[in-house]
Length: 433
Image 1 (spheres, rainbow, N blue to C red):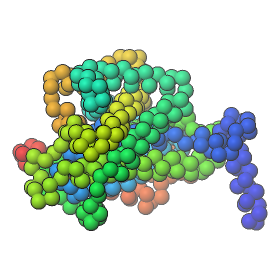
Image 2: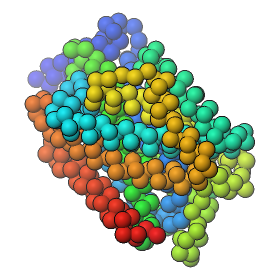
Image 3: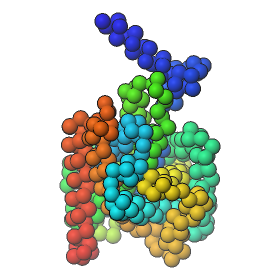
């Protein structure tokens, strides 16, 4: 019996390899399996975008290691959420937006589309500003000029997707590698306070301002637009009928764990570096929030190579995340409304608010943090439908959520909604001042 199981398992793997490779068993087994990976690395770019730089460095410089637990919790939530999104695309052959259009009434669909477009604009503000700051740090370019260049280069990157999803994934994966290596270099050059780091894993806040930053961290880490996008990317990972769906799901889980684990490392590194360089332990946190420019200056004081690594990581983040964000916008528009617009027009519409912010001279780091708070308010509108759909056996078949998975995902959504509600009350009553 066990021998039959082993033979069946081996047969399934051979069938999967043939399907992945288009029926040609010419590629090495490891390469064939790697072909199933990639979507999570595209999604992971959104978890290390310039908005993360702003919120994580602000949190570390202002509160030291206090909000480290928020980053860890947000990253665990991201792993769960992106796994559900990937599974939805594999099980149904549709993305989250398409299923929402199918299952909800038209007014609800239009409302979901409208908020998703606002989220897309807030996303682009963070990404374009981040790229502009990086170009300013590297070459001294004015922020507005850097923003325009970031938008144009990101559009060129997105053009790779029209020539095949794999090329786009490889390009984005390369930029992701630049970010990871950059923070490996920087983290190795600062002194980490191990006891303080350990204490930061204990949940706690230090006033309303820390709740604002925590909400921004959630908005920067759990990104609504890639919840939509990930389900769309895995639609093309069907592998044909001969590929066992459980095998595809297994590889997608590996994809998510590796990609989100690396993104979590980067986010934790940001906060740790800021805490080590800028936090005053005996201070009250007031006035200690550092801009990305001052973070770069602080790294220059340690090591010029560390500062270069930071600037290059920020540039890679801005370019890659801007391309990913525009692609997500296409998925949203086509999924909810069955409409497509030329990529040039789409890029211009989402780029305009970011360039306006730069042209008006708004503090870029503050604009980044506030854009992440806007994103946090968009999370429930993606997360609640995701949980609803993945718990339905009529949609998911054998890949339907276990009850425990649904409960944990619902709890994550509840926590995010509660934090946003608290923040909204504080803003309306002037409590954040």
